[in-house]
Length: 230
Image 1 (tube, rainbow, N blue to C red):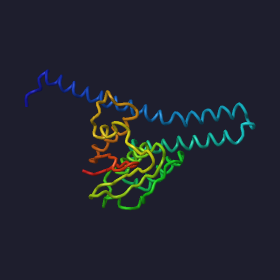
Image 2: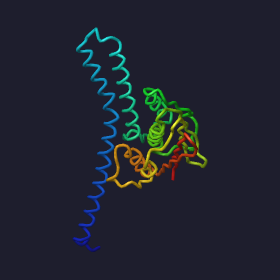
Image 3: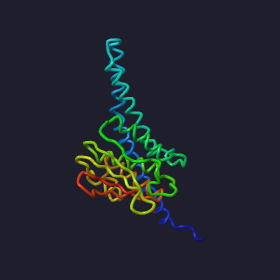
Image 4: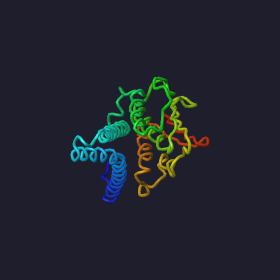
């Protein structure tokens, strides 16, 4: 087999470099998004500790409650991001009930959203493929973002085999601008921001695990996500 010409080698190097830059840009934005979500509760814990140090016994129960609530909020967000983006999220031992518990802790700190689904139900699959729970966690977080005034999130089997439908219902439920485009990877990387990087990264993960994610607004105050295995 003839050796590649210098021109071909340079083209390959350029393509590899461009792909690396693409991955780097997405990773940087994803890190920004995670840090942004954690700064508020972690900062509140820090402020509460400082207040306790300054006031001592005079700080009262309010400082303790602030620290406890903020620590719980930070822990819940870390667990959710770990499930959605950590390597452990693809572990075959993880079940939908684990996702349910982690998401329950996440929405409990907000208090405006409830979830209404049975994690022990088939959810459209006879056997869950690798990466299902990881992606389900990510889509539940997308559904949460679709409920600015709170509401309810349901998970059930889709209309066809190997599909799961996640439905967010509540006053003002809506898809943020360009979320559908991000899920279809139709947003140029240079136009991504921390708000859009979550659906964009979920689309990348979905393709890696042979899934696809579709979003729609089938009715007023309702947003629907379809997680399908291809």
